[in-house]
Image (tube, rainbow, N blue to C red; front, top):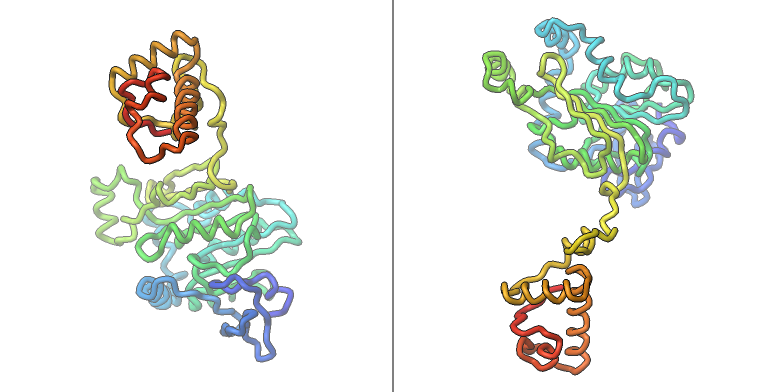
Length: 355
């Protein structure tokens, strides 16, 4: 049964408002919008793409009843032990023995990974699972005692959790599947709900690119089109640090892991670069010149050498002085290439300068 202690950590998937457990057992946001609770599992699903989301819900509703009965065949095909494969991926989360952490499994399905993850989580920690399929989650729930896992039916593209809440996020077989999801939206939400320094592990069915044009690859793709899925490097978020992308299970399952950083990577673009050109990487990127003739460039080089300064210093100082002289004289919106102020500074035939 739901209680206010659990509900306080959920958010409206669209507005991110806090949710309240109402007297009739449903959840409402601060504006009064109501979310149903189905047999103890809250439906906090935001439909981001009707066709794509409904396809996924319908697909997994059909598979949920027999999923556990036949899924072992995938590992039999590749002569591998299923639990060994799953545990090798879970190892990458680095959660063993850590107390007081919050772990989220996305697209948890029937809980085949969930039961293994739960064994790794120390007392006093929170374990949340999410899936868009209520049918899958009902199968999952039957594998746990009450209170062992916190379940929500929701969309991984619009998660019902607060910002920077989780210490680790895991998904095997759901997130990153471009055939029925918006991977960039999923990655954006993962970054939003994780703390800086959190671990993220995403794995899924997808043939290694170098195996496409092999008998091995062609037979698998003919058997199941999901083997054509692959995680694009372009979908990795800019906040990802220490990224590792590998293929396991004979090259049919990709596995991406990274730590969550903040914003773009840090670098010092503002130190002075020694040499004739000078400047910094930032000034070289933003301070480009246009319309300069070869003769003007030669004159600038000679003047720079005579003054014994870098080209950056010469251009920066000279253009600033010329612009200030011109603007100070109220001579805007004119062609200044032959103006006395420019000629006096040695700028014959400069043309157009762009700082």
